Length: 346
Image 1 (cartoon, one colour):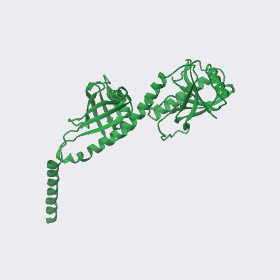
Image 2 (cartoon, rainbow, N blue to C red):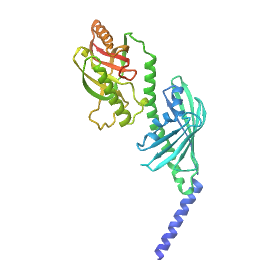
Image 3 (cartoon, rainbow, N blue to C red):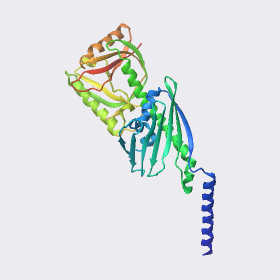
């Protein structure tokens, strides 16, 4: 009995010492600042922060859990927009609001976690460092914690910084794909032959053999594009701004054959686990290409392909595969908008 009394007294003293140390030596809330730079212009960056549908696609707080469910509320963008979320797997829920917006300069978020009446307040400031670089600064104010939970403040800043680091990787991937698409659209010059150096690409797609009869090949491409697109967006959960334009790779002169073999894939930033054996990754190595943009019927592309091959032969260049990049998604019964790239070498 005496032993239990002594143990109880020791526990009371320890709890009291812990509470006293938390009360006198640990702040009831945390205020800290985190700074990052991204190699994209401020208008591209800011639109990823003030639109919560964009924000939740790359912010690690929301992307790290496959079980999280998010509801969006109007106006969806800027001051007054809001979301609520529930994550049954991790037993968390909350709400997030944009309380203030100064366009292209600053935002204020409020995050209420797990029915906590006091929010985490995050002020984010944006500053152009150059035409193609933006500095982002987070000013974080966490809610007050009761004495026995103040120990959490020891790792709050580290946890927030880790989340931002992972989010910045995601953001750069999103902006990289978006800017690449915008730049490609802006640089299009139809029916003009150009020379380009293309960097390596990682494609996720399928290998196909199809009849080359009139219209049958294009119908087959449309069908298989839908398969790849649906797999990437629905099964793998990727958003449209997380990947590039679809690419079809085939032999340059197989337009004359009765049957055509091709690989149709969507560019991704890195390899991921793909449980479906119908889909596989293919790496496109860096190359020098003869390039033409073409718009019209799919059958009409043959003339542009012939021009590329004739140019390669005239320049005494050997050539490999031809890549057809669909600037606009292929749709049955509609014209195509494609970039034709013939890889050439000595």
